[in-house]
Image (cartoon, rainbow, N blue to C red; front, side, top):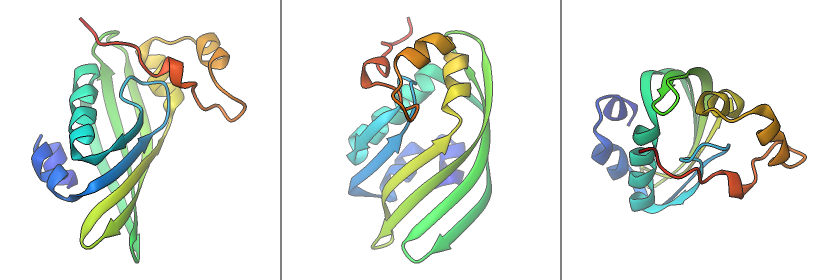
Length: 145
């Protein structure tokens, strides 16, 4: 799936997901939030590309235990609207069912991404709860022109 993603072959990525696949990406980015099913994931990839140019996306390690898989990696990207760069390490946690991915969640430096999007620390603090989770009202920034 990661090889297909790096080649821009999103259809192969989607084909390896169950029909009821769920994804959660935390943070204030316009492409963050909960997604369900292949159509919403297709939209996730479309929104991500609209906002961010991925300059580097590397898988460093894959760990598996039964139906759980953890993929560790790093990325470097440029926010199209601001021209700012961010670099983050990430962990993707997946659940497998019948040979396909049925659920996934990303853990990453959401503050670095928010800063590159141009959001101030004050805005983030005003809109986050006690655990630093961004309020849903801040997750929809619209689309760039």
